[in-house]
Length: 214
Image (cartoon, rainbow, N blue to C red; front, side, top):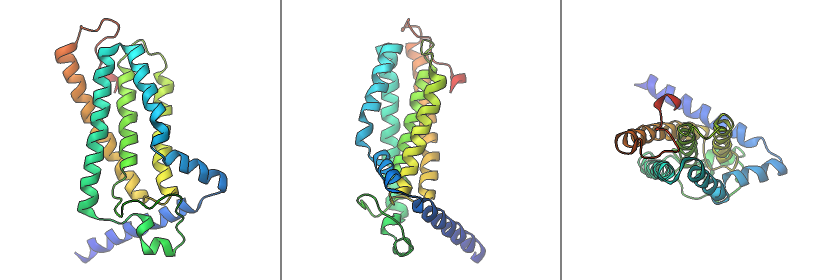
């Protein structure tokens, strides 16, 4: 039992050390970038653009189905994150006295005390997988080879920004990424099952989505 406790403590210490190292890589220019990336509100135009593009390329039925699935991904990742945060009660770095005494930099408001796991990371990677899968299912969309790398890069940078602004440990972000991808994958599979079961063949511009493109 002591051995397991010791291993866990080593993991926690490594997580704190890695977080402090990443957080220490800064300049006035990059600080502004990370603060921008971390702000959820500034990404509203991106979400709107994705929704509009889904309607234009895939038709309103396909778009509504995809948008509902992405909204469900966001809802599930948010609620699951809030549940786990209050069950685990791990302080955010900006509330951790040890992290503060070791030079953690805080670039935005401290927010709630608990941060495991990162809802930002879960949301962003969930949105990335959900939107990429939706565009993959639309034959008329010729640019998914560019869209997928871009949307996943965006999710990565937003998630990373949470470490730079002092709101999350690296472990929070990694777990949030895994949870977001897992929830998104499950929702996308469900959405495709429903689409194939009840709506296949009703939308002439686009073929039914194929699981092989996920």
